[in-house]
Picture (cartoon, rainbow, N blue to C red):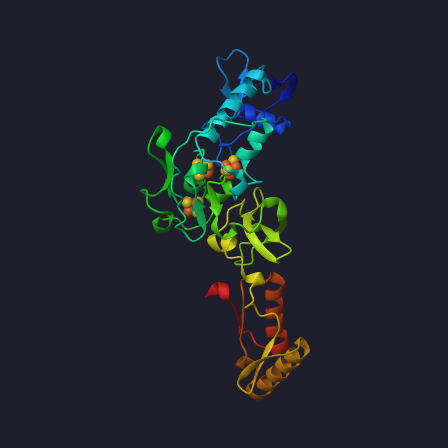
Length: 350
Ligand code: SF4
Ligand code: SF4
Ligand code: SF4
């Protein structure tokens, strides 16, 4: 089947939306509430297009593509509507990009820039209080556009069902459980809602003031906390040699962007001053820093002495889920082949 979009004939398959056809063929239609993982919500209405024969503008995220359909994504009427929609979103909140943690990675900011929006009516409203009660996440209702992505992420993705939209109309806002501070809610601080929030309404508390997106290097890696092997992107301040923020990598198995609280937020250890980087040997009751050669010679000598005196079964090895498969294999090989015992186990079984 085919439809015509901005004068071009584009193929599509049953079940695709107009937005889906546009994305598959490199036609840009701005979106805010739509996300690949949370699907169509038709809340923000930024994705409106003209469809021949239909009255009014249609949300392309919900409009099913049909054979022979004629779609226009770039008319003056479409741009005017999108501009008014984004101006209203900006007017309904308090958007001070200069001081916002999302500056540079905010989808609302990007869409406003793409539409060439330079001003919008500012409605003087008292600021709503932030919720920074939880250890890892700051909720700023003044920057929320009520897109619902966080709610879908928590309810359908994480299936933790913490978030809902409370109140009505102009007073609507995202709440935790029965309107309790996030700290007292059933939130497990996994941060999936933060990752999917298109604005600065949900941000990582520990990253505040530590660097904006374009100042940080982005490094893809594998989480070292357990054997699942979740894929991460570290946001690194090279000058200070520290990790500022961690995202899950979208569209990559096994986690498709989702992380647990450890993978997303427990990232200080690589640059911790308390981290052991040199071997220690106990001498006269004190741990003393020694070279790797000395530590290895000492360990080999002591293991040989113990094996000779007490036999190989006096030795047992416990390996670790945080190290690599190769290291775990080497540990098993060493225990069985070099020492000569089957006393080898792994912390994942405890
Ligand atoms: S949420 Fe986006 S648009 Fe609003 S202040 Fe932050 S960066 Fe600017
Ligand atoms: S951090 Fe995780 S559990 Fe908590 S509200 Fe967000 S998605 Fe839900
Ligand atoms: S907090 Fe973010 S994701 Fe949730 S509704 Fe508001 S803008 Fe959307």
